[in-house]
Amino acid sequence: MQVAVGVLVVLGFWGVTGQSRMAWSAGYGVLAVVVPAALFVRGLSRQKAVNGAGAAMVGFFVWEMVKVILTVAMLMAAPRLVAQLSWLALLAGFVVTMKVYWVAMWLRPARKESIKRI
Image 1: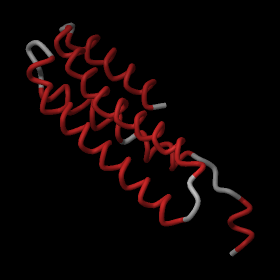
Image 2: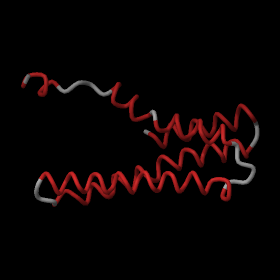
Image 3: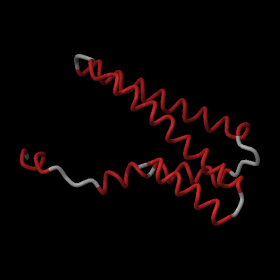
Image 4: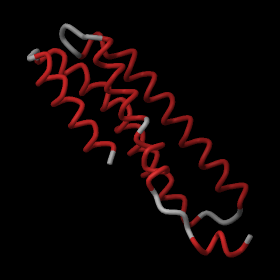
């Protein structure tokens, strides 16, 4: 879902401004969210065989830290990697893509089994 929204943001910037530098900047902002999140998911999916809640929690925090560090590193590298970087477009792509988490949670139907247990 994040990738789809990211593509829409990039196309929106390109369509509205007509400048490829704006689209590249927004696209890099999208990538600064999607790439670390994909690595995080990949890392957590390898944690399925871990026995014990403590080990699972440590694995979660380690992969979350990797995600944060990679995100910060990508944002710091942006001026060197994107020609004529527009920080506004990058930030817009970053924030809109990151907020997809909240929209997905809001649109997800409530589980009836969890309600029955209460």
